[in-house]
Image 1 (cartoon, helix red, strand yellow):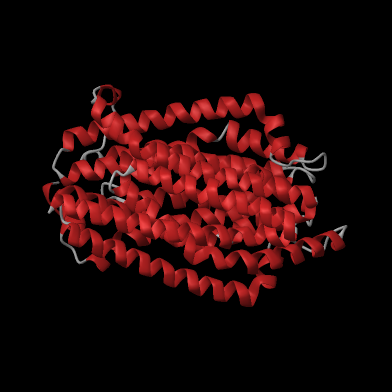
Image 2 (cartoon, rainbow, N blue to C red):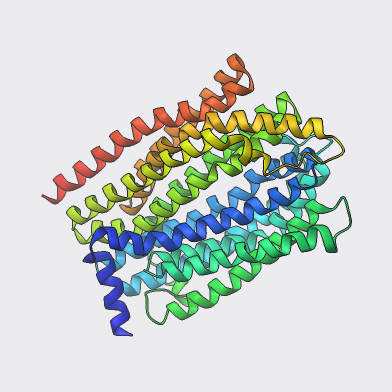
Length: 466
């Protein structure tokens, strides 16, 4: 047991940075990609129906589902980054109380979110762009995946963050990946075997919720087991014993992290509203692209999440040289991934988007038009990948260092001052093409601000220590 603690300490404190980052990031990347695949599986199998209105319905609900991530960040990243910083100064008893508080906070916020969506589902879906042709499909999917499925989904994500930030990246990734792998098999079973024709969206929703539940059960077991070796806890008594100072520290990072993801979701809501204002086929095409472009994003988020506990540990421990090396290594790796993906998307946009929607349907003209929109949007929006990486990277560095105000400032500038205004302006001038172009333009401007903010923050931190 003691040797395990030493190994975790060494991983954060003394193992060569490329190896430490590889150890932490690779399992996280795998789980991110597998979870992305299972999100894409719904789109893929729904696309086999050749029904663009079913595809548009899942695009409408995507922003509500992504709110699960925002809410889990409130306690998962807020609590996880604080646990890593407390480990860096050997305050393991405080870290246990923080982890227990984060765990029960995740449960509470999941129950509240489920209730609110259940009460306001129809007006919310209408606001997000659901038309008469898509509202039935969207309601069915949201009822099962969000109202019934938010609890296992959010608790899984919180548990994954807590495990990852104490060095159990492999266990976190195993649990999060398990649901994705299971969904690959359950989706076609429920969509095309168990449920009747016309209920494919409902079948996909049931498969997704069952998969998330299995994943949640495994992660609860992993969290309980890891608590014997790491400063983790699921005891309600320890959650109640957390200090006010640590609650403030948790929310100082958790709230900006949740707002960051929430503002990203708000931007996607604006995309859906503007796209649906053109027609349902533009909305369906944009929905396809918003799933495909998550491939480089998932890899880069995995890199950043693997980086976070190493940066947090060394920041609190005062080893700023190692912290800076970790930051640089993660950034350069993510940029390489982004440029490779740009090249691939430019070359194979048509092939990739066609994969998500069958043209062998009762209305192949609509399917072909949707694919044409999606191919164009993918080629344009793919140029945002490297600057998105710079924005993710800055945000996770701020969260690792406990810089909540800076994280929030970056989020507001990125989404509210840049991306969303560009979205409305370019859509007004250039139509749906301008809407697609708003992503690289807005993210590019935000990345310039992010680099300045991160450089200033690190310089101030180093000067204070000196």
